Structures are given as structure tokens and as C-alpha cells.
Length: 266
Image (cartoon, rainbow, N blue to C red; front, side, top):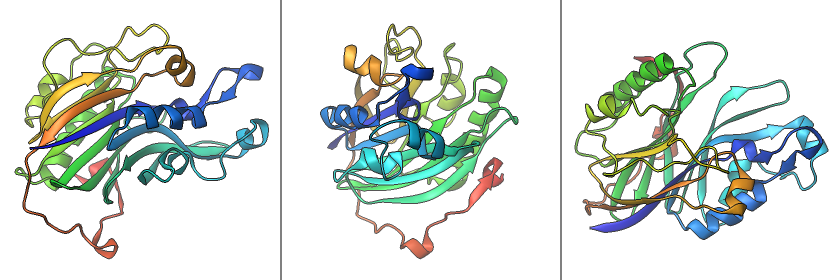
């Protein structure tokens, strides 16, 4: 068995505070991720750019926020979920190992919320690992439909014998999605779900990590003053193990599917 660590973190677009108290936290978030030491990181609410804030907040990065957090330690795959008046943001996956985009799927359920699923394949030392980074909606009925799109995606694009991790911000404060996810053999660690939101006084388990074909060992949530200042969510960190596989090469860039599939194309 090969040990690895995966984290999921909603970074709140790298900015905290309102109005004149608004402050840039993306550089602190990078420092925090360095201390976590995850091999793979699923990020939500990652800014590609914001023209207005870039002129108002000192030390705004010269690269997109995914690349800023990746630094030299990680490779980064980013795809946009939402386009706003001054910029755009979406999901990103950071990996210490080679990573390829498999697909980006628009699962927006109504015009007020733009949501997406980012599917990558990570070439770990134990073999390929499929990772799907999710950010689901605020309405329960939307989340149920989005999880059905997710399950359709898994059935269509992830071989049943391949290790799979689904991680992200599920916005599932009532914990209603465990059962439909279990239909695809996606399970999480036993015990009470760890609370990650709001970061100052965590009361809700919004962020989750599910696995299939991997052994999830233990989950932790970093806490304390630095973390609650950096985002409205706390990271969720999972220690896990993968069975070593026969090494298969990742597809060449020309073979990688990069089309955005509306409603998963299903």
C-alpha cells in the first residue's frame, strides 16, 4: 500500500473582509498549505483574475491564484466555473505528481449559481488516481441533481477498477448526500463528519472527501487563528492509502479531453 495525503479547501477567492476591511489572503493560504503537506489539493473559489481588486489590494499576484498557491511544489489544473463583471473563478487541483485534465463539467442548476466539476487524473507513484473536485449549490434540490450528474460522470468516465477520490465543498450541511454517493461505492471515514464552516466557529461539515478503491484512514481539520482569518472555510485533510498498480502512462496532451460538457453531456 502507498500512503498519500489529500486536502480540500474553499479559499473564498483568496480575499477576506468587506469594504475597506477587505484584505488579500492568498499568500497566507499558500503558507498554510505548505504546512499541511498534502500531495494533492482540491481548491474551490479560485480566482483566475479580478481586474478591480487587482488595482485595490496590495501584493495582488501576477499569476492566477491557482498558480500562486501551486508555487514550485505543485502542478496546477484550473477551470472556470463562474464569470463575473470584473473576473472569473472556479476549481483547481494541485498535485505534486504529473496531473492531466480529463474533463470539466458545468453542473449549474439555475442562473443564480454557476457550479462545476473538475475531473483530473494524477499519476501517483502507486499508479493513476482519478480525482473529481466539486463545488455544489446552496439549494438542496440542486445538490441532489448535481450529485446525479456526478454519478453519471463517474459511470461514464471512471473505470470501475480505478481508484477514485471525490472531494470539495458539498454545501451539504444536513448530510443528505452520503446515501446517493454510496450507490457509486463512494464512502468517507467512519465517525462524525468534521466541521469546517464557518471557520471562526465551525458548526457545519460542508467540505467532504469520499473515496472508492482507496483506503481512507483518518481526517483532520487545521484550526486556530491563522486559519480562520484566511478563509470562511477550514481545510479538510485526509490520510489515505492506495494499492500499487501496474503503471500506465497518462495520455498525451493531444489525447486529453478538454471540452466543457454542459450538464456532463449526459
